[in-house]
Amino acid sequence: MKGLEELIADASVFAGLDSASLSLIAGCAGNEHVRAGTFLFQEGEQADRFYLIRHGAVSLEVHAPAAGSRVIETLGEGEVVGWSWLFKPFRWQFDARATAPTRLVAFDGACLRGKCDADHELGYQLMERFASAMLERLQATRLQLLDVYGNARASA
Amino acid sequence: MVPEPFEIVVKRRDTTDTWTFELEPRSGEPLQFAAGQFTMLSAGGAGEVPISISGDPDRPERLVHTVRAVGLATRAICDADPGRVLGVRGPFGTAWPVDEVRGMDVVIGAGGIGLAPLRPALMSLLARREGYGRLVLMYGGRSPDQLLYPDELADWADRGFEVLVTVDSAGPEWLGHVGVVTRLVRRAELDWTATAAMLCGPEVMMRFMVAALVDQGAQGENIYASMERNMQCGIGHCGHCQLGPTLVCRDGPVYCWSELAPWLAIREL
Ligand SMILES: Cc1cc2nc3c(=O)[nH]c(=O)nc-3n(C[C@H](O)[C@H](O)[C@H](O)COP(=O)(O)OP(=O)(O)OC[C@H]3O[C@@H](n4cnc5c(N)ncnc54)[C@H](O)[C@@H]3O)c2cc1C
Ligand code: FES
Image 1: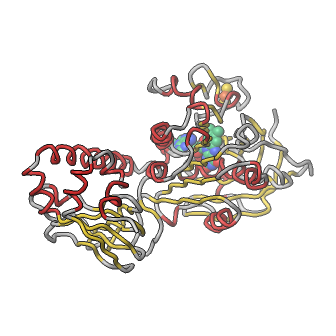
Image 2 (image 1 turned 180 degrees about the vertical axis):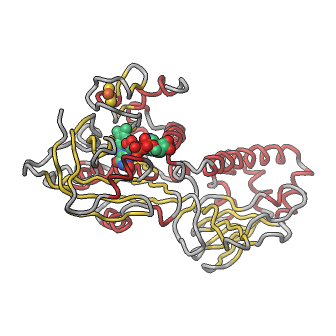
Image 3 (image 1 turned 90 degrees about the horizontal axis):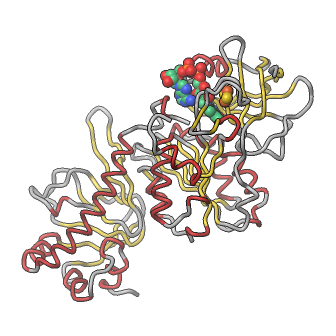
């Protein structure tokens, strides 16, 4: 079975970090296993954790009174769930729900923020990686907002 | 070129605005075609429009079209019921490179109704399954109820296609992927340098998809896309369907991406 450091090193968001950084990050992490249907977090709650999916699937959902719950994105193996732990006010904007039995690495966000404050090189390395992952998601969201399949003119 | 009469023998509703038709030629002469080609289709006097053939090239006895009602001509076609006769000219245009990509892994990237023009290629690949490496369908739709051919998706998966479906938005009962189709590219682990891709969907979706494929290491000369422009004659005479120095009805609709890219970089072409 792989140790935490190895699991973290395999994730693309942590790719290229040296072993000292990986062991600092692993010091803030632990394994978790959740059943299908479990909420990892819900909108409005304090955002003090984030997750790396080892196996399984997680959906991000918003709840609108008239429309009910809508899934806005699903995440799978090797992907990170949650950015809100990084920035004030540290509150979740969405619900995150496991849609299958899911194994995760769970990170203590406050612990990691503390290590980044103390070691700016680690902080820079992490921010660079998280910013790049967030940019990719932002671009995907923009494409989703274009509603390309709904707009007849743009359809094939 | 005069339209040939074809009778509607089967009409199936796919989604709220899309129907699949099976047509038989009044002449009894099957319309042989290659995967990727289209016909000019008309119902009464409502105008003639290019519609891709979505049936099996190995079974040309019935001409199959999947049509989305967006305007005058397509609405008139979608309103027609079994027994009605439609006008058909064709087949026209270039084909998916099903033989050329033998031995490679193949990604079929479809968005919305773009799965219809790719269906003949998919069927040909499956009929010759042993000739290819991995076969992966990446199909993006607006929502689960707007997906085409849901029963066939399961059948294709049973017969050797890796079927990855994603929608832009869904209720919590949907257990599949939600997110744009480009994200499926980033998740798939393929030997991208030896992978061919065939794409059809909204142009903006294809552009993003190509960017994701190239990022992963796919080569522009192994990427093919079916392009759409308004058409009138369908036979290279009127110039309506110009794309760069080419005519989509004659030199397309299926193009190699490395050939297309310079023209698409110029807006409004
Ligand atoms: C090679 C090729 C293959 C095609 N294959 C298919 C197919 O398999 N199935 C299918 O349903 N359609 C297909 N199309 C698109 C189809 O030809 C158009 O939807 C049709 O020409 C629209 O004509 P209309 O008279 O119904 O709409 P119009 O009255 O001309 O337009 C009405 C509305 O539809 C919009 N519109 C116009 N053209 C298009 C277009 N090309 N796509 C989407 N919206 C449009 C207009 O902006 C307007 O809002 C294909 C097009 C090409 C070039
Ligand atoms: S439709 Fe007339 S030239 Fe292409």
